[in-house]
Length: 264
Image 1 (cartoon, helix red, strand yellow):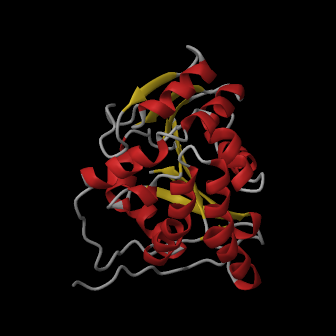
Image 2 (tube, rainbow, N blue to C red):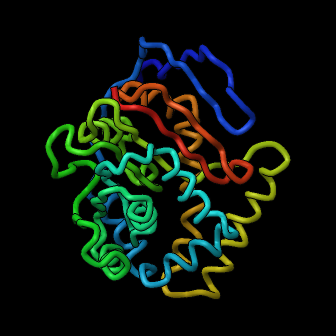
């Protein structure tokens, strides 16, 4: 095994709610791997296909009402310039709908036909929807002014390669913004562990329709991702993908994290 990736932090947090890190331009020991395997992609497809009809309502419930607020904050990171936005992992179109309401020209991309069917019902013909993988986006370089992505990187084998692919389709100067579940620290960690280990699977039993499997999967998936890719390492990968001025904001005591930056 090679040396681990090293991140040099040059600036502390700008405020209580925002961390702004200036990373070293020299990346040590970071090597590309293959992008997401078919098995991993297939697992994600099978996991979420049954929950597509109830995803919006139950997702808000299981996040204790925080998920809609996180999505609005994600969209608020983009300038109100009415530009074109690619919404990756658009799912049922929640972020795409918010982007549309704020005057952006939106294209949604997702690999799940079941999720896209719900998005079409929500968005009508106002938003172009594309069935494709985030690992191989079917658009030329620098196609979009901005890009948003939601709950994606836990489902790919190589977040670094996926981030490069996301950045590839954004014009220089455009904003790339991501929402992901986080793992709270300090006194809130035991409460979070109880929620994902006990409450989520129990809620899945009651809700049925595929939510039992999702409830059992989420806690371990979130925990494993943040163990492998703590915030400092994620910010490093963003910089290595050609995204500068990278910032991160923990939301709801760290239960959600939004990262954004500007395409170099």
